[in-house]
Length: 89
Image (cartoon, rainbow, N blue to C red; front, side):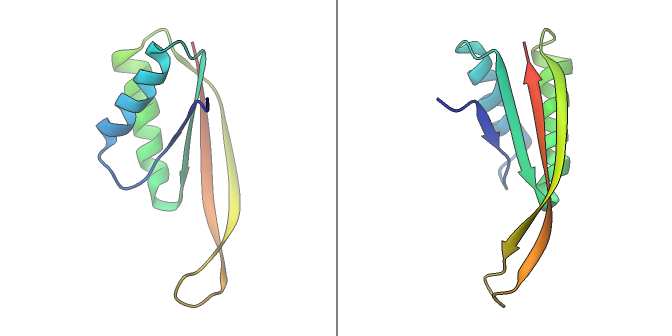
């Protein structure tokens, strides 16, 4: 079972609920992954989980990276920033 929440276009609270569900089901660690414009939403999710709902969960580390993604329209490779936030209980 993967303990990863992939951030996309849905509202922030959907991802908070997904992370909290993983924690309630016994996961000791949860990873929050996002690319591009969704990075700010990933930060919001991590802060809401750790500060408001699960105060026993802390941020263990943050990985930032650049991924090459092929454009659908042009077929060119574009550099896209990505972030992974590691939460532990």
